[in-house]
Length: 118
Image 1 (tube, rainbow, N blue to C red):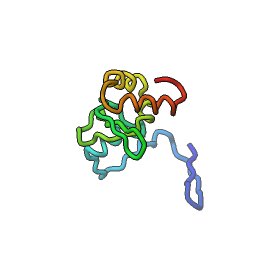
Image 2: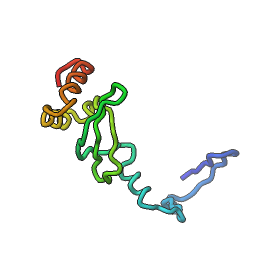
Image 3: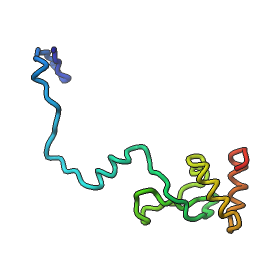
Image 4: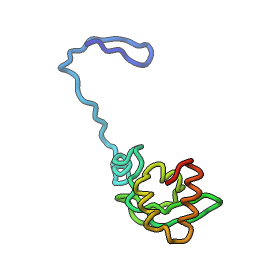
C-alpha cells in the first residue's frame, strides 16, 4: 500500500496492509454532557409533551417538554415551527385545548400563515 503525507513535502512511502492499525487517541475526557451531545448530535430533540401556549411579540409560542431532558430544559418554541415539525401531535394538542384562552386565535393565525386549515 502506498501512503502519501498530506503536508509538504508530500512524500510517499510503501507499507504492508497488515501493519495498519485503528486510530486511537487516548487522554480525552468524555463526560456525560459530551455523551448526551453525541447521542442527540445534529438531529435535534424529540418532543415529549406540549405544555403551554403564549403570544409574545405577535408570535405564538408553545412550551415544549423535550424527551429525556429535565423540565428545566423545556423551552418556548414558535408554534408554526412546531406545527411544521410534528403536525399530528400539534393538532391533537390544539384540539384537546380548543376551549382554552388563545388556542382558537392561534389556530386561526396558523391557518392563515400556512394557507390551509389545521
